[in-house]
Length: 296
Image (cartoon, rainbow, N blue to C red; front, side, top):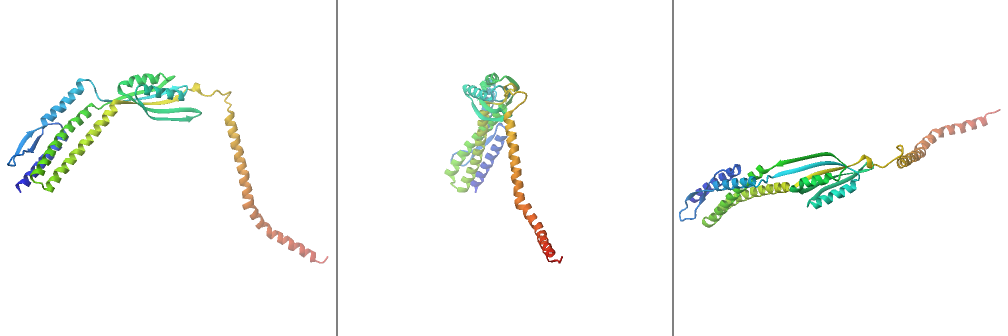
């Protein structure tokens, strides 16, 4: 009973350390079982070391002047030839070791318009903007923005270190429980807590990797609009292609109307006329016969 009570006390201390470690990188006292003949509890301070490491990481980020900034640019360019400009921009991005995320092109009023989403290395962001703008006849719109995620990344790093320290303590505790008691209930309790901590570690690592990818590669959204001067030349607004299409459309509608009218006459009007005219015909025939029989 004493061993089981001591086991629950240790588990409670570790849960407390985990909660405090996720809240902030402050000094935490972890009670750890020491493998001696008697089962006693010794106090080991590990939170200070973790906090110092987190502070050192923040100092390193600030000292080398590498702020983690997510950079984004939006451009609307007026070009003479959309297709040629599209290929030129793709070549520029490839030369800067970037890539095209999405590329869409469509026709609008007999003109080709396009929209692209590009990713380029963050250090080449300004150079990419200048080279892409050089392709256009005119820059209709230009917007750039940046989001600093350095503090978020530092906080995630400190929380990750605390959780990794807790994970290490839980692994040692799991080994001690297996060697001393070997009870399945106690082993599973430690294992569940270890799994929970491990899941939090994976979530933090995933978020940190996501921020690293966003800050390593900048995003540029480009919209290509055809120049008014690049539209086809027409004389006095005459468009024979449209005239032909309109004439054919009208002819098709007229033929459709005539065919529909003929179908209605054959299947609807004619039967009704027959039904109405049949009694009249019979009446006329009878009247004519009566007149023939009538004496002069």
